[in-house]
Length: 620
Image 1 (cartoon, rainbow, N blue to C red):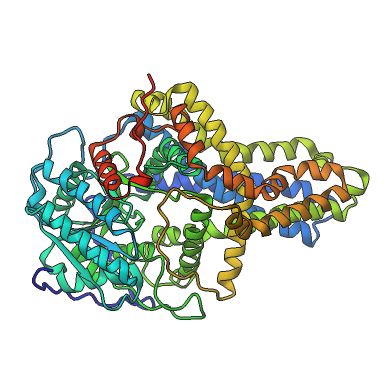
Image 2: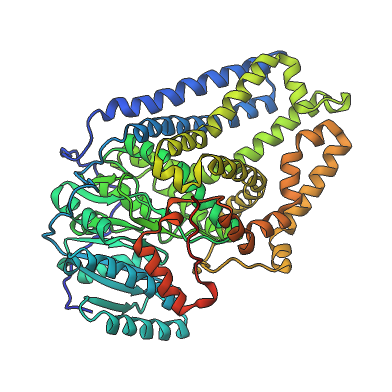
């Protein structure tokens, strides 16, 4: 490690504090009406839909069950409408091809750098050879820009496995020998208190004084040298900016599930990202990695306090990024997302199982933010970010409640005994209102995907990357079918996770699996026997009440009963690669992979040839 350059990083208080209201020159203009559009659209459509549901329920008076249905419907519909309004704004921006903010224009020559930037790679029990291969590809890409001398790289290890520690040192020394001209450093932390957030804070307090800015990478991160240089120059040129990040693109998937995530993120992601960047403005959120941060701002305002309360809400902040962003904005600094700048990549979980394991950890971290919401001095948009994070996990049990209440109300009125399905019961009251709300809900749900597809067709590069209009449409249909089949599984597991968190069960801290996602039938049975049994019970019970009810519930029943074969199918590397050869779930990064991805894949193949990423398939 280099000589110490300490920086004080005081612990922030949640009980005291005031929002610093200094002018932010980098903030876009017109933020009041942008946010008014999102809030007003969500409010008006939610009130309209709620009124329609109330009209259905009002006949004969609203009883307890019907009141609960209204209570659950309102936040769920508002959640959908906000996403729709944001995506609609993003769709317009993508079609207009508005210039990026902060003066970042990928079409201009690379800027000259005047400051040094530290690249931080925190790691915990990750595969060292794979990790360092990715870092080598990043460093080589940086050196190709001619600006590599302005970047130092730090591997910050929290690894506790002795064998992995030994391999880390060997792999790091191998990298140093291969790249003697680069400034590379390695540190193994003795105490991994506060996990990743504590790892970063330790570096800031001990060495941050030598670097005006730093960028945090994840173990699966890859970034081009061009992108890193432009981010570094943008922060240097905007004195009020404390954080700037791009939209990371998911790459390197081989299983059906991983490729499905890649495709959906690439097709729908730009519309969603442009939308949120449009109304977030200088109050952007922080996603924890692939983001450039101003050291002085982070040190002054990013020191995380211990949370009080009951387990698992007390203790170290787990989902630290949202909280750090809120505290830095409270300190008077701007945070930006620049979705027009490409060259930032990450890898997704190979299977639904891996995603749900990671999701359980994030569930605990996001629900923990309930203790941060009352913090004094936070910007209202920062509080909104925290609420959205919490709501992401509360929506699963809320959807389950809505379904159950929607069944209980017709059951209470004897509809099933008369052979009516739930849909027939509600339509018998007022078919036009029921169908109107149903159609409006479906439009809101699927609009971001449809808008993403249209935006993809409008861009020649994206259209070719998706395999063309036809293959892109087929991929869109397959993705929606698979997502619908997996939705009941996810809803059940997320609801169970919320219950476990509220009961005080900790999620632990394990390294994410990054292999090809192989699972035995025994693994699948252990993980999904509960969902399978639940589906069987639901199906049998629905059929006994009414065949019409069973038919109406069939999408949920099929997803739960078939959870084991569904997860097995989507975890298949063989089928995923066959779909790749057929041009399904295709992305631009597969058709014309950036040099940093090609180089990282080659280096990782040398280290682990048994899981090498296949070569890209080009479809004319």
